[in-house]
Image (cartoon, rainbow, N blue to C red):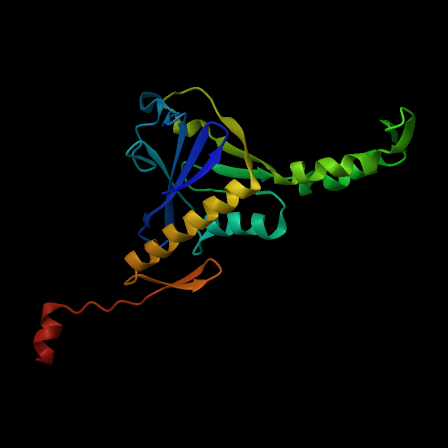
Amino acid sequence: MATLKAQNFNLEFSYYDLNDCNEIEYSFDIKLNGKPFFNPDILSKKDYFVKDEKFIVGDCLHYDWLMTFFIDILKTKKGGRTEVLEPPELDFEVITWEDHRAEKEKSWEGKTCAVGQSDGTITHEPYAETMKMFIPLWEDKIEFIIHFPDRIFDTQEYTAFKLSVTTTLSDLIKFVEEFDEEMRAFYRQNVDKVKYLGSGQYEELEITIKTKNEDRENE
């Protein structure tokens, strides 16, 4: 299990299994202060996407799309959003400083701010120069959003919602390292079904199963 720490939340991800089409399924759970975030009594009883009180998340894609999603964020420092079409249709979204940088820097143009000097005088410095000292803090901040559809709840009413938490770049890096270990263990476990090709890609292995009659004919 790989854990992304976000304030008092732990977002727990794991490789769960390969489905009948050899597409990857992941498990996902949320803990708040070490306790389950969801009361299991309110979750849908459709056990094909809730098992052992965890969400089973997959999509009709023959590549490691969730790991690729996180890796792309680290590579580009930009956010993004998954588009999961299979139940329970949980979407994960990330917003980073790079997503706001151009808009913020443009809003600073032509502005100044008062800056006190050591001799007691006040000067007016370019606003952009003053804001530069805060950029490292903003670059480290990541907003992580989980979009939950109404189908996850045991109710007839429309109750879709999203949970937004804040994490950091360093916590995301640590999480991806843990998730990478999970990934490698997963492929070792399924070495007879799929072969990992790198960069989120894998291929199915053709397995020939001989019948007892075929075995007798070859004896």
